[in-house]
Length: 535
Image 1 (cartoon, one colour):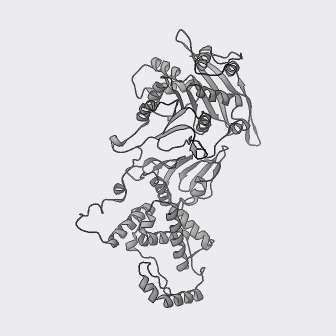
Image 2 (image 1 turned 90 degrees about the horizontal axis):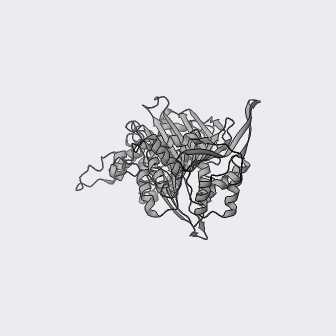
């Protein structure tokens, strides 16, 4: 079962809510309660709370609370003298500590003294204050860590508290598509070019890995615990997280997580062409199909490039077309275009919402039912993974262009996969459902990541419906491999894209009725080789 969103009271406990209203809660008690909440979030429920553990105070320095200005003034000379004496006899590097113990000490101090800060909303102002107060504590206590300067130590503590430790630079780095945490000491990164590298960096322990991932999930209001060991969450619009912990994975693993970064850099047509993913003719064909009301399904396995291709296709939709997007949990698409501060296109972005309360839950089926009420020209279903496939094909058969992605192993298999997903929602024969999905999606594009990590648009196929009701699969474009070999331990794959068939007369007629210019239509209908398969 996937983890579910919970209220803050469920996450932190009900101790404060249980206090009767007529009995005021002392400010000190409130601060201690907030500190306990933060301690549980950072270290887990078994870590000693700050009220039971006090960080060491320097003997020579007089540290005064900001809430006692009178005392600060009266002790100012003595305090200054004490600090100067401390500076004289103690250097910053006299006592070296390990980073983990320093981190816990500073976290415990901040959670106790500035509980409202560390449990804040994560704004830039709050983060700046965390850095400032952590730095002051490090300097006042003359704390040093072997191999780290004071600035590096403060930066490391800040990253652990306000960000996500060593993962931060990879999550927000350029050219990174996925971060896989296989175990607390086994982390690998997949780059946009398809190369995967093992990191020498890792978490300090299984508990450390769990705590960092919990902070990630906290952004989307999700909780990772024994009751919810399998969780889907997100960090931002384009970063989604899938997490598993014990008992699903072994306790000594800590946590297994997949952090997916959906192409934060916008791809251009020339990027696909220069990289060998597809030809300009193939990209133009898919773009024109959507432009003139033909539904398209982009199929492929994980990391095949289907979402990247979908994202680019949607950027080619004219401003005059109304777009309605449906995404599951986190928003990966950003289609709103502005010019001179004004929105120039018409886009409605929607998200599903999970909840333990049925009436508060919003799934893709509900959003698809709502979509037709918004008069869209194009409906975008981020990914078909369940019974929403049936609602999507019904919407496509109303005449609205539906663009979606699906996991499958070929163009042919895509339609059979759609049928199996539709059967989760409705009890119909395979033959009937096959008729529905082939009518709904005349065009299927199949993407694949080859053994050498190159991504190719392997095939664009049309399903032609003949007058007698039979279906004929018509390959329009294909990537044809001519050679596979291994050279110096590397896979070398040689091939080329070819147009193997023109579009059918029935598809040409639909495109003409939907407004495609005659000269463009003639290019698509140009005679090519005949390679057809009967469904």
